[in-house]
Amino acid sequence: MDRWLRRLRGRGSGDRRVTHPGGTRRIDLLGADEIGEGEMRMAWVDGGASPVLVVRVGGVLRATQGTCSHEYFELDRGFLTRGSLTCPLHMSRFDLASGEALDPPAELPLAVYPVVVENGRILIEVPEGPLELNED
Ligand code: FES
Image 1 (cartoon, helix red, strand yellow):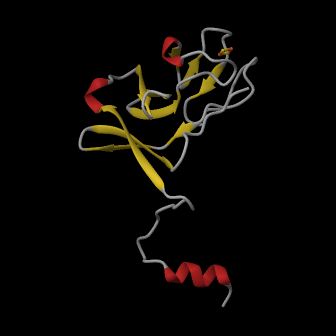
Image 2 (cartoon, protein in one colour):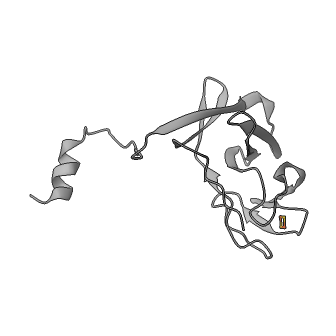
């Protein structure tokens, strides 16, 4: 039996959990009732060192790095348009689902963090260690 099959059979039938070698952590960002449809809020995590932008569009909550990937600029001062976020400093747009930069001058995508809503709180589940952050 090859290694892949052995690993698959070794799992419990309902086990779809993705694990990272160093483990994961959940970070509490804000209350689900603190952000309405079409709004965005910045949450400062890791002792205020890392900004995370929380956006609710079309009933879907998303979380991305809080600063632009082009230059340091806090994205809660940007604006939302149909599934994208525009950084007002140089007008690059970013896809909210993938983080992809849709217009220059930004080239790198925004880091996008998986969102979990639990007990009325919005959390992200990320690998242990520093939050992923893309900067030019
Ligand atoms: S700082 Fe955001 S596009 Fe330049």
